[in-house]
Image 1 (cartoon, rainbow, N blue to C red):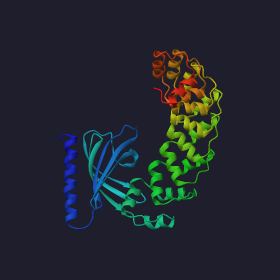
Image 2: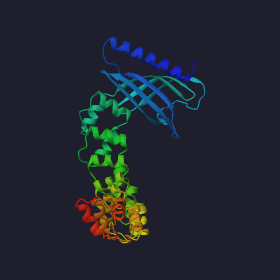
Image 3: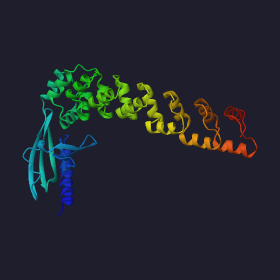
Image 4: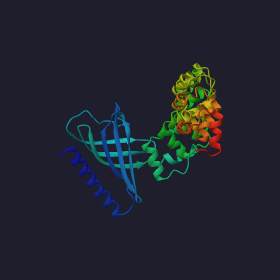
Length: 343
C-alpha cells in the first residue's frame, strides 16, 4: 500500500472514530494530523484537522522539527509513532505512523485548566475553547503574554495577542522598532508593520537614504506602495528633496526614477515633483512628448502638456487638423479648439 493510500485510510478511520464519539454524546477534542516535508530546512509541514459544533478546522504551517521530540524524520520505511506537543495552553497527544519522514494519525487535545486563570491575571480574558485551542496551536505562552504586556501597548487584548503570535510581533520586534526611532504603542499598527514588512532595517534604510520618517501610517504606506530606500536615494541624487507624501503619490501614480530619466531625455530635466505627479495622473508620457516633437511641437511648457492631455489634444487630433490645412497652430490654439468642441 503506497503512502497516499495509507494516509487516506488513516483519515477515514479517524473520521469513523470521531463520528462514533459524537454519537455516544459530547464534543470530542480529537482530530487528525498529517506531517509532510517542508521546503524550509529544519522544519516540517504539520497539519491539524478537527470538526466541532458543525465547523471544520484545518490548520497547516511549518513547525520546527525540534517540536516533535523523539521523532526521527530521517528514518526510512514505516514506523509507528506517539508524540506529545506541549504548550502552556494545553497539549496535543498524537499517535499514528511515519513513512520515510511523512505520515498521519490522530491527536487528542488536552486543555490546561491552569492556563485561563493565569491569562486572566495578566488581563487577557474571554478565552473560550476555540481561542484556547488556537493559543495552543500558535504557542501563545504565558511568558510571551507577560513580555508583550510589559510593552505597555494600546488596545491589547486576547485576539491581538494571538495575532501578534501569528504575524511575529515579538517583544524583540517591538524593541527594535522603538530603537529605530518609531515610538509605536498601537497594537494594530504593530500587526500592520509585520504584515507589510515595516522592519527596523527598513526604517533605518529610509533614514540612511536621507529621509527621516517616523509616522507609522506613512511607513506602512511606503511598504504598501513600494517606496524604497533605493527610490529615495535615486531622487536625492537627481537633486530632489522629496517628502513622504510626494513619494507615496509618485509610487501610486507610477512616477518612478526610471520614468523621470526618460523625461529628461526628452528635455524635461528640472520638473518639480508636483509636475511629475501631474504628468502621470494626466498621461503626459515620454512617448506622448516624442509624438508631439515629430509633429513640430518641440518643447511645450509642462502646464501646456498637462492641458493638452486634460482636453484631449492628441497626436491624432493634431494630424487631423493638419490634413484639413490647419497647420502651425500654437499649443494654446489647439487646446482652445478642443475646449470649444472642435474634433
